[in-house]
Amino acid sequence: MSDAIRLATARVGDLSAVMRVMDAAFDPVYGEAWSAAQLLTLFALPSARVSLAWDGDLPCGFSAARIAGPESELLLLAVDPAARGRGVGKLLMDDWQQWAASEGADDYFLEMRADNDAVHLYESVGFSECGRRPDYYRGGDGALRDAITMRRSGAPL
Image 1: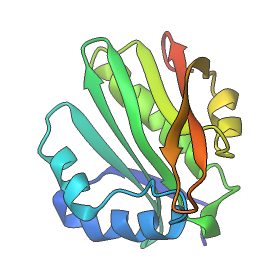
Image 2 (image 1 turned 30 degrees about the vertical axis):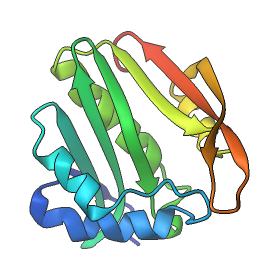
Image 3 (image 1 turned 180 degrees about the horizontal axis):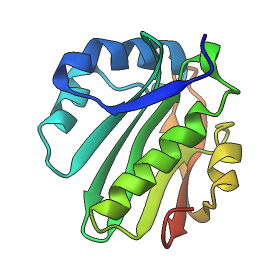
């Protein structure tokens, strides 16, 4: 892998690249990955954006987000396991918030399962827990997991 990661707004033609990262990044036991059909709906929404991270010619991460008034929600964030630890997740978080701010958002939300290691990334860029839904997620292993809602307000860091 190269040292330079390039970010670009994904288009419908990039769907297979996004799905490649999705398949590599999401453990099927948790059932969090979206289908290609679900992702396609985002490309049709003017209030949504998918950003794709590239390492040379290889997709290595993506984010999907939407805006509703002054709020923006991160719907998905994924980094290929082979690219983790290189700052790709932080680049995608920064890119999402910069885009959302340029569209008028100043309040940022995301939701995650309580045992997701990504909490460290989210906290490092200023997000904190603002709500919890007990036993919200049911994984393929049958275990119930809480959903944590996180929020950050104000201009992007």
